[in-house]
Image (cartoon, rainbow over all chains, first blue to last red; front, side):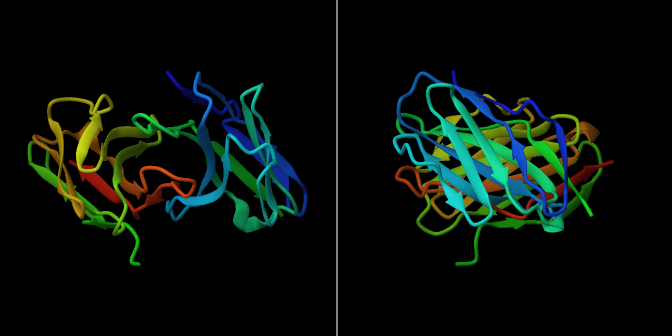
Length: 115
Length: 115
């Protein structure tokens, strides 16, 4: 069975600095998708970035980028030039690309941004 | 599109009462997910449907919980009888079943309080 692990329950970063959130996963599948979601205090879950497993190039979305290491089954999120509005819970998620298309979330990392 | 719609946004009920949470997924989406979020247990997947068919209900905590999806545009999560430990935020999310753009879109959640 697939699993997603976020080993950092909480992280802090100074405003304007860079922070990296870790995510590892376990799967025997070769084709899948990986996602990072953000949940601010408003509790609305928002997609931050996605990565297709068959793509070697790391995804980027403005200040957000990922380091996807397929062999190591690692999918970390880097936030550059951190802003106060980045403070939130961040969830890593895995989705199968076939079969039941199961969706699995990690336990989340709470990011604090210090002014 | 209006996004995923959940009702009610807040529900306060007394122990033993029946509670019904409602969800309208984004039009065209063919996967629907119900989650429960608490401080203690984080984000838990309760059940998900593909093409209106329940695929995995292993996350449903007890027989007191049931979910239905009678058509592609409506789903309900019912708790009968409710207990104080059911107090949580319940999220509904929808997505396309397959393809690259299959991220989940979350509703605003229903905050349930059982007294």
